[in-house]
Length: 91
Image 1 (cartoon, rainbow, N blue to C red):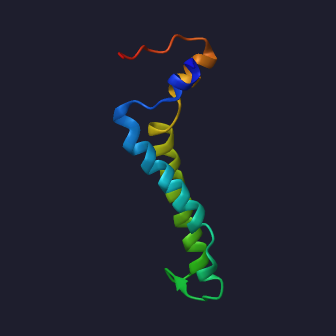
Image 2 (image 1 turned 90 degrees about the horizontal axis):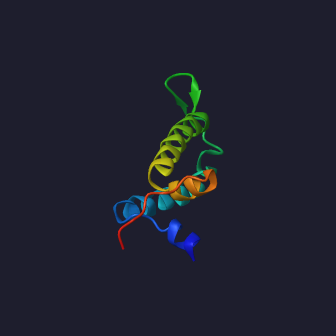
């Protein structure tokens, strides 16, 4: 039971954690870029639109992972694995 208590998010991170999960689902859906498969449009004069899309997708993915580390990472579990005493929450 102690493990389940440690996995609970603090109330302040509950909404951002849900938004990170939704962003990860959106990224999984947006990764299927079938809509640019037959498009020969050139962006910035030299870059195919499919490649430009993937470049922007990589930047968006990096931002979402930074948010995931900040808001959805189980810091209490890491402290438990290290053998540190996690800070106690008031119940």
